[in-house]
Structures are given as structure tokens and as C-alpha cells.
Length: 372
Image (tube, rainbow, N blue to C red; front, side, top):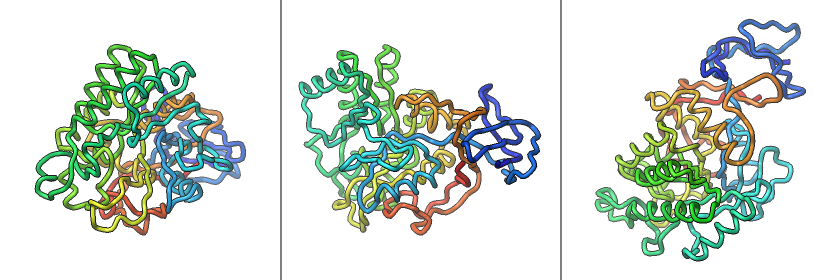
């Protein structure tokens, strides 16, 4: 038995309960949540006012070199994740509890690199609807803008970098939504980065189209101007956007248009210093929670209940799991987390074999202390 004392626990009544939690670590069950608990022989942990939150769920984790399933599992644990939709060349998850391939969850994944024309995309979405699958789609790249490093704007012009206008993403999102309306396909659009994308999805939800969406932490943390300081690790797809788009993403998170946060965890080999030749992608599993605490929770855009929706309840629901965003007695896995404890992220404290994080060298708050 483990007795965790003096913890803050979000409960169903939308309030923060302060008290003790008794956990049977052999059975993986929460025995009780009470204001004052004692249990003879239990291992005692003083939470000192830290939060106890359900384990997180991610619906987009890539397993690519230099990472393996084993190192990805370590990243997930340190990041507070218990369930991941993983994408790898072999799509094998044998022996890794909480790891799921798309086929195991009846999901079809459409990457940004897809070259489907409108007729092919329509046929795919119709087939997905007929098979009652979920389609997770990333904004589609336009071959007219190859190797874009940044969004179109002043920074790209000053740095003389290839760029992409934001309407490319908006056109892709609109096409996905329109075909979802026509075909009845259950659609999740991940990695949105523009204010226009938020507006399109907000209107689609008003029309009762079966669409949900997620963004990734770098889109509410950074803008294209931060590339000057971050360098090659800022190269992601879709590219970093303007301050206006960043604000639009934050508003979409706050008002519920954006359902959840995906890690967009994409390990790459050392990017070096040449952003033009650098591959797309950033590791994210270990930094999603600190990013939410630093850029959303502490400034007051969201509260702890919304954080649990973004990381726990909503992504689980989208993938077909029935898991609430709070803890109750019974079978459960959870984390002890501080939302205020600050640290400086360095390459040495990144668990991933890859080090391509845009947060390296930055001061963040929010720390996962224990996983139960």
C-alpha cells in the first residue's frame, strides 16, 4: 500500500479536493480518497500540495531513429503518459503496455506528406466511414511550397528562408471538413497551427459535423520570430506561425474548439545548425506538460480541469477509451505533478535519444514527480 498525503486532487464536482489518497500498488487500485487517512504499514509519501492527475493520453507519437520503442516508453513515463497511439515503420507494439498501433484502435492515419487528390481523399474518407473507423489527418503539404522552414512573413523574408503561406493549411483543413460532412467520416485533424483553422473547425462543430482537432505545444509556445533564437529545432510542420495565429490557437484551446493536445513527438538525428537541410520534427512527450503549465495554466488561459480534459479525458474519448479527467476509487493509474516547480531544460535531462526540442535552454514550470 502507498499512502499519499497532502495532495491536491481534481474531483468530479469540478473542485480541487485536498487530502490523502490510499493506493494498492499490487492491484493498481485507488482504495480511498479522503481528507484524512491512516493505514498501518503503508509507504507514506508527502505530496506537499502537488496534484494527483490521471495518466495522459497521446494520439500522435512517432517512433523513429534514434529512438526505439524502449526509449519512447521511457520518454512517455517521464512525461506522464500511459496511453499512446504510436506510428513506426513496423507499427508493432508487442510487450509495451499502453502502446497502440493504428490498426489496434481501428484508426487510419493520414500524414502531411500524403499525395492524395480530392477524388482519392473522398474515396478514402467514404471507406473510413463505411468501416466505422476514425481518420486522424494532418494538414496536407502543398508541393508548390517544398521544404518550407517558416510561415510566410517578415521573419522568413529577413532570414531568406523558404516559407509557406497560412492559407495552405486552411485550404487543407477546409477540404477535410467538407469531405467529412459529405461522407459522414469521423475525423480528427491534428497539429493545427492557424487562427483560420480554428475558425473552420469551430463552424464545423456548429454544423454538427463529426470532427475534433488537436494542436501541438510549439504552436501555443512560439512564433516564427522565435526561430532566430531556437534555430533548426524550430523546424516543424506545419511551420511556426505569426503572433496572431498563436493567439488564435490559445483562444481555441480556452474556448473548447481545440479538443486536446498531441505531442507531435518526432525524434530526428542531430539537426545541426542549417535549418534549410534540417528534417521536420520535434520531440514532445517529455515537454507537453511543462509547456501547458508554462504557457497556458500559469498565465490563466486554462485551469487544472481544462488541462485534464486536454491531456486525459478528450484524447482518450477520441481514441475510444472511456476515461475521465479525474481520479476515483477503483482501477487507476496516475501521476504526482507540480504545476509550479520550475527548471531549465537541457539536452542532458532529455530522456529521448534525440535532442531536437525547441525548449532546450528554456526555463519551464511543471514537473512530473512520480508515476503510479
